[in-house]
Image 1 (cartoon, protein in one colour):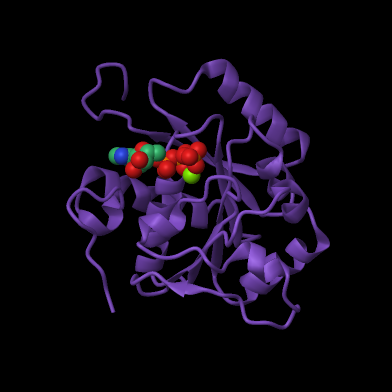
Image 2 (spheres, protein in one colour):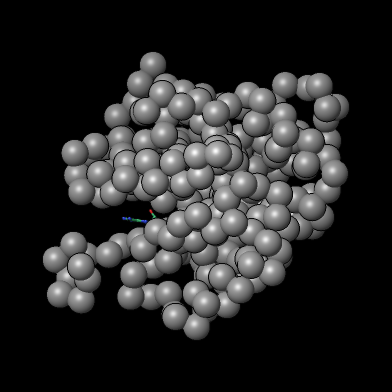
Length: 221
Ligand SMILES: Nc1ncnc2c1ncn2[C@@H]1O[C@H](COP(=O)(O)OP(=O)(O)OP(=O)(O)O)[C@@H](O)[C@H]1O
Ligand SMILES: [Mg+2]
């Protein structure tokens, strides 16, 4: 099965694989996969300073390009406050991280096929009252380990790091962190504070995505 993203879909890696944006995601993929050759990066999360900086869209595009290079990829929606990955792929949200937390260790993860070969989604599931407690739980640690066994790369979406502790809690438990900033919108001071918060929990920041940068912008190179 394969899907072609509709004309206005932000999943540019599917919709327009020859575009400069899709090419940028392939470069990012290569850089991330080769960022540390002695300890391959198997789990990574994306976060940003504020809402709507494009982290879910950027992570989904990265996941698609990884799957296109024959990696088995699981995309996990750990934004347990404003989950959006299921919508991007036209899928439901009845099961996912929060239902998995309630099940036995040996239960199969409720993964959904995305239509992209090699890429599956673990949606958020129903929203819980205290997301950070779930992400910081021992059970969550075992879920991460379980997902690692089922894929080459596991990518986690999270809420903004300056808003709530969720991303920082999870950042300490994954191999790498990708920061997503919105060109012309993310404030320098907030970007710096985000980096500091992540460094405090010993997160390994592996890259930065500048979302919405104009290739013909006189101020960019
Ligand atoms: N590169 C892009 N080109 C066009 N539209 C984009 C791009 N990146 C994001 N968008 C749009 O911007 C909006 C916000 O993107 P997204 O949901 O990825 O942000 P987010 O940081 O995950 O937000 P939230 O904080 O709510 O989780 C969405 O409507 C998305 O379709
Ligand atoms: Mg999001």
